[in-house]
Structures are given as C-alpha cells and as structure tokens.
Image 1 (cartoon, rainbow, N blue to C red):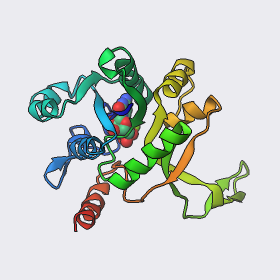
Image 2: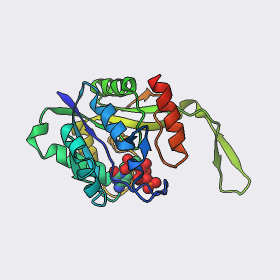
Image 3: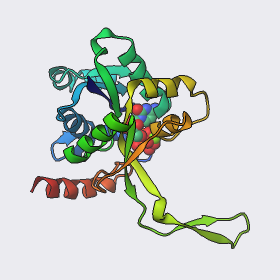
Length: 232
Ligand code: CTP
Ligand code: MG
C-alpha cells in the first residue's frame, strides 16, 4: 500500500506572462516544478511520481532536465488542454500499468506550489488514509462580500466556515477514478470537487499559508523569502 503523486505541470503560465512556462522560473537555483517534485518525493509514503507535461515543453523536460527526471524515476505523460484533462491523463497512466498495482492513494499536487512542507504533506496523506479523501486548506481571513444584482447592493458572507483549498489533495485511487469516470463536461476547479459530487467524505486539513501557488511574477520574491525562512 503506497501513495502515488500526480504533479500537473502541463499549463502554460499565461497569467505569469513569461516567454516560457512559469514552472521553469528559478527559485534559489532550482525550477518551481523541481522544488515541488522533490518535496513530494521526499515523503516516505510516496513511491511513484507522474508528471503530466505539454508537448511544447517536452523537449526541455527531456533535454535539459532528462537526467534529473530519470534519476528520480519520474514518469512524464502527455497532459491535456485543461488541468482536469492533465490529472485524468496521470490517473489513466497509473491505472493502466501493473507497476502501480500497490497504489492505494493518489496525491494530486500543483507543480506551481513549490513550498509545501513535509509536515503538511504527511498530515493530508494521513487524513486521506483514514477518511478516504483529504485536502489542505487555509481559513479565510478577510471579510467576504457578495455583490448582488442591484448595482449598489452587497451582502456579507459568514467566513467562519470558509476555507481556501490548496494542494496536495489526496484520495483513495478508486474514489478518484470513479469521480473522473462520472465527470462529464461541467468544469471543476479542483479534484476534490469531483469527489464531493460523489457524496464521499472529504477531510479538510489546516495547512500553512507558506504553500502559495505561483501565479503572477510578484509571487516569486515572496516565495523566495518564505523559502529562506523555511531553511533557517
Ligand atoms: N496545469 C496542467 N494542465 C493544464 C493546465 C494547468 O497540468 N492544462 C497545471 C499547471 O502547470 C500548474 C497547475 O496545473 O502546475 C495549476 O494551474 P495554474 O496555476 O493555473 O497554472 P497555468 O494554467 O499554467 O497558469 P495560467 O492559468 O495563468 O495559464
Ligand atoms: Mg491555469
């Protein structure tokens, strides 16, 4: 019984606005996706790592990073148009090969979250082992408003039970497979939503705000300062 990681890396980083996929951006001497891959692989529960990538980026992953990837036994698979398509590709790969027969849990983690702590990885895997599904999240700290149809009319949402979902999101392999089999069309912004739609229990695990997703260029200096604090 072990955990496999799907590390979706097949985006293009449109909002980041660089010439290349944002995941190749440098953070203290390593690319963002390398940080994420190393942190997930370092957890003792994790035995396999599958990384969906785009065909555009394949030459770079296999060239410049080919040895690094091979040494760590990372499996590259073709991603898809939407993130959901990329995760599905990783899942299909895990289910189609008998090398992965011992996999019971799948942890889906955005390659764009390089700073996730080993503590949080362990906590969310442990919760999923018990409950069947678990997601890392942080409590909403701002006051949340809803704009109503009327132009100058707003309301306030009780934030006490609102959380911001992060990754890793960890699931029993059979639950995630069923969720993706039943998922048709209607887009989901994370994987947990598909499992929620099945009516399965999903544990919410309080994670650290350090686990930020790199979306815009301004996120990089912030990530660097967090990394420095984590290391010292
Ligand atoms: N991702 C993926 N396949 C896609 C789209 C996204 O594997 N078709 C991955 C990204 O590479 C990233 C993670 O999903 O690691 C989270 O997505 P996001 O932060 O939105 O990255 P991008 O889609 O690349 O960025 P943007 O939305 O700004 O274009
Ligand atoms: Mg995106």
